[in-house]
Length: 150
Image (cartoon, rainbow, N blue to C red; front, top):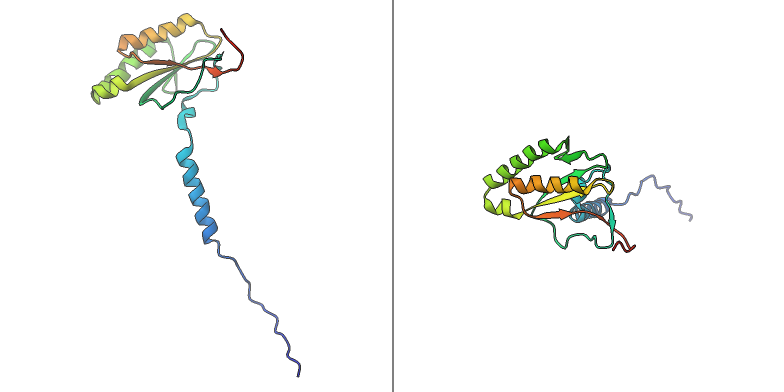
């Protein structure tokens, strides 16, 4: 007696739930680890290279980023401005931080990213404008380099 096999027309599919679950876990993992500090950086600013430049050990509590391009255009809060406009904007920022309490203002660090071709005197004017508004913590940015600069 011969038994005939019936052809199976049933489609076998794998369960995709574990793969989707793992994908969402990886997305969540990388979202936690991503560094959002690059958001404040403008590509028009070409930082000077220095052997002493290194990233900060910890993130700043209240960073205020001011950038200056090679043609000495000042970028603050995603707006192009001159020095007098910066003075007004920095005073407004200081007033806003003081309204949250002295601790916010005391923790504020002004991060200055100036292009390597910009004049040092202009950077000093930016620092002076920030000091006039009451800020006293500053950080200057540069690119890391293995070439000795001293």
